[in-house]
Image 1 (cartoon, one colour):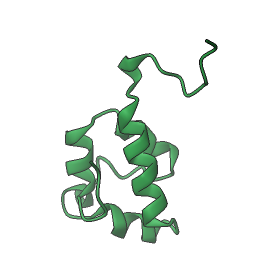
Image 2 (tube, one colour):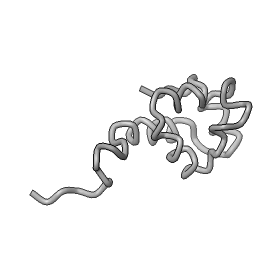
Image 3 (spheres, one colour):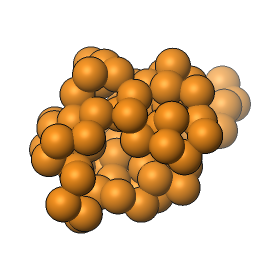
Image 4 (cartoon, helix red, strand yellow):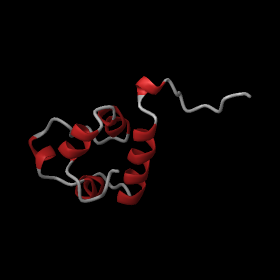
Amino acid sequence: MITKDMTIAQVVRQCPCLNSVLSQLGLACCHCFGAETDTVEQVARVYGLDPDIVVHTLNVASLFPPESGYDGHPRAE
């Protein structure tokens, strides 16, 4: 589970597929020096985003990594 107090580096180490989600959110800071020390909350605020929404987005995305084959669209029964 991703939390606001995790650093960006911790998030990416825990779930590497979230690197692309962070980039899509405009948080292309995964490889900068601050990734080891800046928290999700800090980075979200710097970019003018709501940290709670960023955390929620990351947690949902982590449930459906690319290798799961799920593309975000409902499946017909």
